[in-house]
Length: 157
Length: 304
Image 1 (cartoon, rainbow over the protein chains, first blue to last red):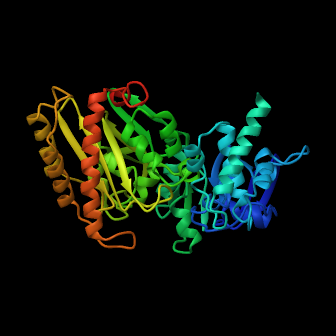
Image 2: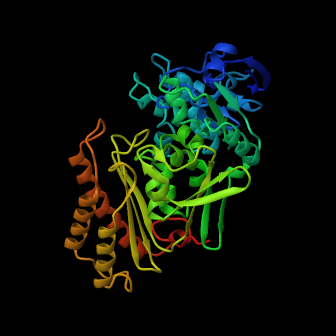
Image 3: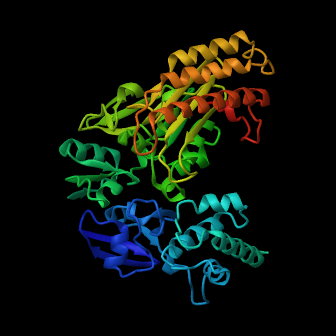
């Protein structure tokens, strides 16, 4: 079936199988490989994207449900002026090891900081609770979110 | 597989009537998991997520109506005064899951572990169903949830939502699981006090084929609160042995099984612990008053 959706500001049409997930369409039809396919059960958060502004697991969205709707993926975070502050902070804090969970965690962290620029640690942990990382033990990821939060506040101050 | 994308409720009900085999999909947090794992391939999926009629809630004439399309994140944001409901919603999955999962999905999936179900049971909710041609009916929750993953919905019906009479009094939802997120309950409990009727209502999740109410333990607790004078004087003390006995009665009413997430014995034990804590919290909440403990103003006095 033909699915028309706006991804990172551009309209696309994909001829997808009816049972395809939004994740499948993003990766296999549109070639956006930043969004990762981890568990396909909503457990790992590696496929996190924004659908009409709300962060969701793209593996749990039927692609047809995104028809005529707006999707933002991790690829939209970096702009012409460089990386998103969350991405910079992940690099600087060493919050990346194998990197598979990173796009999902970056999306979850950016989602949190957009709503709450100064979250306390419990809020950060809660906001990242849908994203699994099997390498880092999360300590440096939490450091990165703290760093990004400081920088974002610095910018708006 | 075919996909139906109705734009209005009427259109959706017409489609369901023409294609009773169509499986509704809202947030996809249950159905997509089964489809992705190859456990299920419905012949037709009917997308109900964008139906505006299902995405609303109303608080009128003392009754709260929650549209089937209400997501957990919206309940947390828009209905924080309904403490037990908001707590249950916060305990669902993760932010990603709470952004998508809906009350209607919890009802339709009818898992004994559905997090919002004990709240609806403790509130004596009715499930509102609709079919094309303007037919609607309301079933009490216990007539709707008839077994594990079994409901009394007819093939031509869709879930419109759930409604219940709003009562005055504290309440809570609590849940035992292996971690604090992304967890299917091993045992869960909702306790609400109905100040006006001087009643205690308790529902258990994940410890029976469906959500369970525990009438004998409820009557015991209401009687004990009366005997100790707590209904009239929030500062009156409830003897610890009474709270202990309440926990034992709740545990005895559970009907748990052994499964991958826990043993029946552990689940029964957990019910007792959750029951004692919930009763203590309710008593503390009464002492603190409706806006105590940093809750939104008028919290347990949320009225419609």
